[in-house]
Length: 111
Length: 114
Image 1 (tube, each protein chain N blue to C red):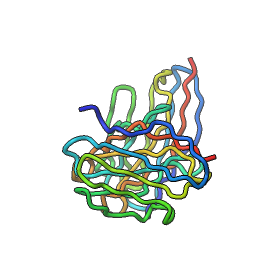
Image 2: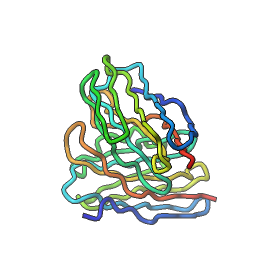
Image 3: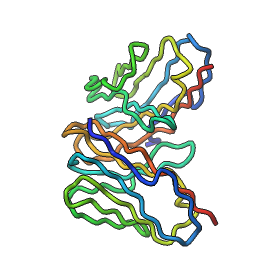
Image 4: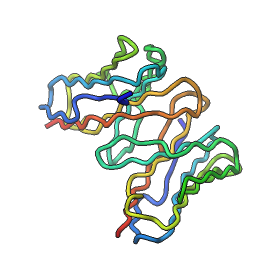
């Protein structure tokens, strides 16, 4: 089974700051997804990246898929308290429909 | 559509008791997944179904866990007998067939075994 490691594990920042979280693997993934999970809720999909080197933007969030398709990053510009939550990356295990999730980054944005 | 519906939202049970968690996927979705989330181990896939057939149950921790999907609109995850280490949040998710499709998660069942 392929593994996805996320860093940092925890992040607490002030409103307005920028941040980047990382999702890394030693294996190649055909695609990676990013989810956000709020307390008491299930994860909700933010984006899917498919092509090596791909960059996708969702308002203040920028997602990048590594050229070798082994890693991905999520950059948030001018973070807001509403960005608070657990960010998870996920990818299909070895060409199956079995999606594995990363270890997660727990973000807290202080007003 | 109301989304993926799980019940109960919270369950507290005594060690040794049988626990049954329920899930109603989004209508028309081909895949159904059961996940378990803990602080220590994160979000782990337990089992998934395609068109009501179990495809991969390698994540099921032991024989005390079983899952069924008798029809396209209902699935259960059963733990018998339950143990304190089974305490976690259990999520059900469903999706359409195909890679890169979105998995829609329910709100989860928080299980506490005392």
